[in-house]
Image (cartoon, rainbow, N blue to C red):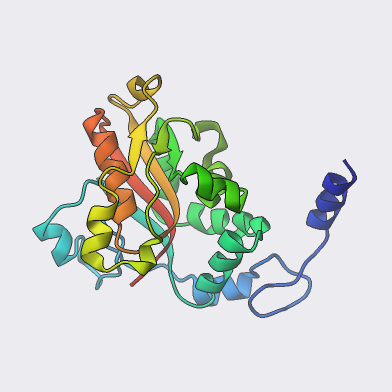
Length: 231
């Protein structure tokens, strides 16, 4: 009880910007957001940066992904890469508020969440979840749309090596059977508009594998929503 009270008091106190160290400030101050989170034109279905006026990248035109839309707040670069590592691996879960604010300010995110039937965080394999103690994608999903977030529908049933350790082709095939729907809840997906939430998108292999499972169950629309997109 005292630990929760102390944590709550700390959260209410003014803090220091994690990027420029200005004081007092939010975890990421307005000046750093303005400098490092400028919106970019991005591919509609994979969120890679594009020149103005283009809707899709060549790769998505050649091989359309199983996502109807993919939205990203920032590029996976300084300072966001460092902050994501702290959020994901060093128990700095308070950063989720800044990430969620930036996501909700990203063009098309709010209307997409408004029209969604369910917001599904990308799940962790149970042993990995136990080791980390929390699912960063679930924290992010709840921060952007608590009322629509379901953590019990999409399941991770197969563990795979960390994606950054694999070559591209191996990444694309390693997750083929990694996800499934809870059999008792799969009916909720049929005809539903789904938003899949994750912290980082690299090749898109994880999001695509999950999207294919949702498509097979009859989802009418699947959007990927990520905080950061690698380039």
